[in-house]
Image: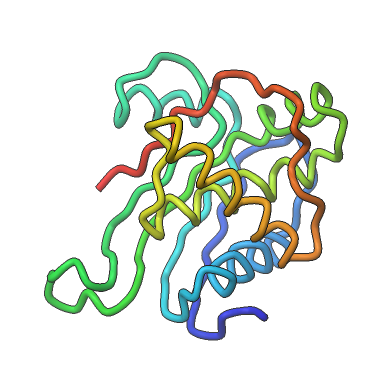
Length: 168
């Protein structure tokens, strides 16, 4: 299931949840495989609230922390020289994942995996700006989570922290 041509770098700058780099790589590669992405370079930053808030404010103009932000650096088919693969970064707030997991009643690792999947979907070109796009991406998130052997996200209402538009 894992995409062999998908390189994933992980940097962990948080202390809210013990997470191994291999686990993060497995989730990201599995999400890429589920999306048919076979060639990619993706950096993942596991951030604390202050870290992600800096990215959120600098790149999206939103104050405070959010759950996940995706940065598209290159996407296959964009017409850029050498754009034969997906290149991007995903920043996730692990403390946010821990808080929301408690609220919706499932494990923090599942919420974190959900954020990683959401980030990969944004890198792949899916958006959630309109109600129709949000419904479509939620369905896709559930399918990818299931493909990874994880439960689908709970239907419980989530905090309005989804300001994770891809930055290109």
